[in-house]
Amino acid sequence: MTRALVLAVAAAALAAGGIVELAAAGVRARCGRASPAERGRGVRASTAERRRDARASPRSARRLPALARLGARLGVPAAPDDLARRLDAAGAPAAITVAEVMAVKWGAAVAAGLAALPAAAILPGRLGVVGILAAPAGAFLAPDAWLARRTRRRRAVMAAELADVLDLLHVAVGAGLPPMRALGEVGRRHGGLVAGELLAAATHTALGVSRTDALERLARRCPVEGVGALVAALRRTDRHGAPLGTALQALATDARAQHAQRTRERAARAAPKIQLVVALLLVPSVMLLVGASLAAAML
Image (cartoon, rainbow, N blue to C red; front, side, top):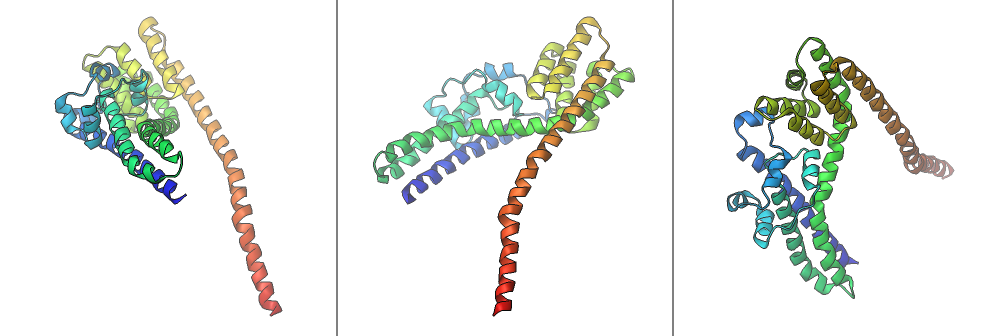
C-alpha cells in the first residue's frame, strides 16, 4: 500500500508539472511575443493561425519549458481536431500553438513513464505494469483536464457577466453607434471576460479581419449560449439589416433569467450540504458537550 501510494504521488506530481509547464508556456508566450499594443488591447490571432503551425519551430522550441522541449525532440504527435477549439474556449493566448500543447503533453508522458520505472520495479505483482501504463497516461491527459476546468470557470464567469454586457450593448446601439464600434466601446468600458473578447473582436475588425471571422472567433472564445445568439443577431444585422436593439434587449432578459435560475439551482444544491455538515459535525459536537457536562455533574 505504501509503495502504491508513492507511485500515485509521483504520477500526480508529474501531471501537475505538465500543467505548470503549460501555464508557464502561456505566460512566456504572452509576455515575450505580443507587442505592448496587443497586450493592452487583448488582440490574439485566430484558430487558423494555430493550425498553421503544425510543428514547433526550433526557435519557438527553445522558448518552451523543459517538458515541451523534451516532447519536441521526441516528435510532436498528431493533435486532436478539437484541441484548437478547446484552447479558444479556455481563453488560451494565441501565442500558445497546438504543437506546443502537444509537445508539453508528450514530454510530460515520457517524463512520467521514466519516473515510474523505479517505483514499478518494487511494486508487487502486476501493479508495476499498471503503474508504468497509468503514470504516462495521467501525465498526458492532465493538460486536457486543466483546459476543461478553465473552460468551466470561464463559462461560469461569462454567464454572470453576460446580462450587463448585453444591456450596455443595447444602450450603445440605441445611441446610434454601429455594431462593431459598440462592441469596442463596451469592451473598453465594462471590463471582464466577455467585454475583453468583444474588444478583441472589434479590434480585429479594425485591423482588417473580416467580420465573419471576427464573430466566429468571438463565438469560439466565449463558451456561453447567449454569446452564440449575440453573434447570430450581429450576422443578421450585417446580412439583412435587421434591427439589433430589440434582439439585444431580448437576449439580456434571457441571460438575466438564466443567471437567476442557475443561482436558485446552486442554492438548492447547497441546502443538503449544509444539512450534512450540521448532522455530521454540529450535532455530534453538541452531544459531546452535553455528555461532558452530565459526566462532570455526576462526578
